[in-house]
Amino acid sequence: MSSFAIYRLPYANQCTLLVQTSSEPEQLHSLTALDGQSGFVIAPFNIGADTPLLLLHPDQTRQLSLTGGMVDVSDIDNLTVVTGHHSPTLAKQPPRNQYRESFACFHSALLEGQFEKLVLSRCLPLPNDGTSSPFELFFRACQRYPRLFIALISTPQSGTWLTATPEILLEGKAGQWRTIALAGTIKLEGEGLTGEGENARWSTKNIQEQRYVATYLAQQLKPFASSLHEEGPRTVRAANLIHLRSDFIFTLFNHARVGELLQALHPTPAVCGLPKQEAFDFIIHNEPTPRLYYSGFMGPLNPETHLYVTLRCMHICPPEYRLYAGGGILKESTEQQEWLETEAKMDTMARLLDIKAVKR
Image (cartoon, rainbow, N blue to C red; front, side, top):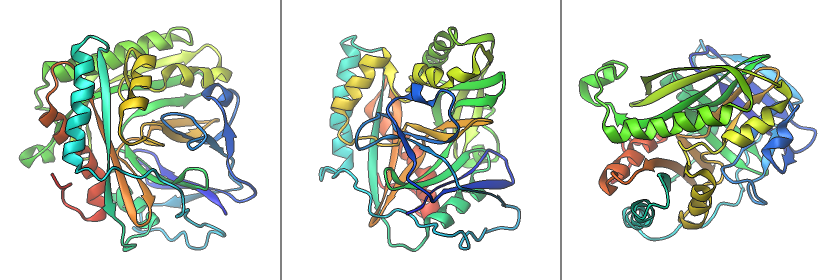
């Protein structure tokens, strides 16, 4: 069975299709194993036997124009979407009740001083009646979300995932590189949908949450980078949401150590928490649904690198679409606000399915 990735960079008028037919994507045991490698990376939140770190080495590469509407990719030989990939059984408890219990667990750990920040995610299954193919959903996302990185990947090891994400983990080539601190969320409504969120008033909680991520990135970059320059924070729009973003522009001491840098960066506090390792372990043991490839990252690696955190995504596993979203929790957070934030984030994928809003 072929494995493939099709992606479109923000604001691009073409997408790139990568197909590997000769073998399955390479499985790597750690992010440091990406040093000196090239290909398309598919990384999970937590590397394990059921969620390997994958590197796709394409046999075929095609550039497809997006200027003429829907693109026909049916003539690609052996391009088959993986539909039988195993997914964890979801709890039968109502989503709202389950989230309320999870929030209480995470929030109590914050109040006890164990963490500065935690990120709590959830998974929502929606029926997949086969009306829209994964390719149709991909091109629909390209049309509706020009600001975002759009990618559809399908491999026997990972299954099939679609993402429309605003968050750069690492991008660049040769000596010049960039990463961003993206956090804080406000939903645009009414007249706000006509702009870029330039009139938004950010709460102290959102500003603090974004600053945690920015401070972490600056610290992690120091051993790897020179000429480190921070720009921001500024307000940026992603679909119907806005976030606070700071850009870090830098020169790598050693281009061959990209894997080591990714090991130092991932997962950032934007998807995990602080302290990093303790928060990561807490999430693994206390979130009710494994994240799988949600809040991992994907994208092309070398000679030009564009790695994006896998947010605003869904796992396409008939007979369901499984939508994922999360939010950063601080001591000041309230359960209702965080629940509404996850709903707003899930709308990015839900709208592709012509579902106007996720059920509360």
